[in-house]
Image (cartoon, rainbow, N blue to C red):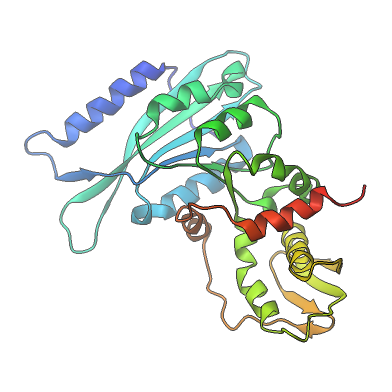
Length: 292
């Protein structure tokens, strides 16, 4: 459940932020360094609250940022904004000072859920990149996605969270010319793509790829191989909770090393990327060009 927050206004939240800054510099207060390398926006529908807050906690010192957590509640009767501001602090190794980042938690009630940009924009840190982590499926064409895509520099999704990944992947290219897109499911495929590449040239004439993995991962691996070979390749998908097998024409691709990563690690990796991933985009565009 989203924690209960007091009804408020943007101006009141800005005032709270200023008070927090003043308190951290008062004489006798423990030394705190407030720092941000980006503005990190997270769109968090209720079913994703626990996962999102756990991931945020794990980011720790690797990506200090001003974080804006948006909890949409469009079904609420009242059109209200509820929010609070806080510091998340950690101690850097070998240093005595705490390093703190600002966290702004906003509950968008009723019609406020479809107009997030006006709430978010006053809190963006000037001259720093803006990352938008969208939990769950993307509501293509909806005002909340259109607005936030207009203020962010990079959109981070996980197509593994989408109940109908093929349909959503087919719609995703509509965003490519407006915002750089990262997909955590695509990132999970990296060691397996490298393992397939190591089978070259034996897979040059490949006709089929067998993948035991979540559906979105299997679809992305199949599309990647097709676009790299420049022709159709049959995908045989076996459902699994994680990537267990990738086999090209009976030849198993085995990564030399798979580094275990938490959800925080996977998101943190995406927060270090700034350019567009053209190979990913090409693979995803293949879904919108498939015959219906």
